[in-house]
Length: 147
Image (tube, helix red, strand yellow):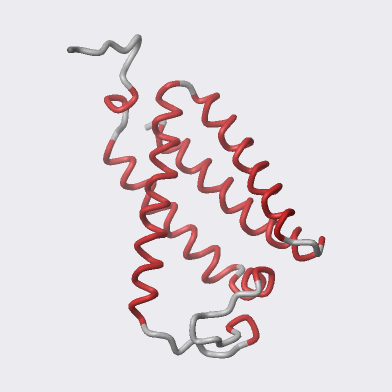
């Protein structure tokens, strides 16, 4: 049984080369964002503690096994790929869907963070770091999906 799409089927409209490039660029933006620009601010805001109980935000060295880092890396690359994929599908249907998704998910992230964090200063630091990262990656994915 053949399905029909009015203009193009979303999967057929995807440029897989640009998709892979968008995933790589988005992943490296995350590495830059959380690894170079805001690592200590973010770790303090989330009260990050590595598995071996080192307080990384205050300069203690994390001495945990590297295998945990590989798992985290895989989870991050898969979730980044899925996020970018969503924008490639939405933009191929209508770019306005991508814009609505950026606004809706950002608002949802902000509200769920507030339920978790009572301290307004800590909340605004996390919103500033996490939501702006999400918006930047979403814009990158949307723009790349237009190629």
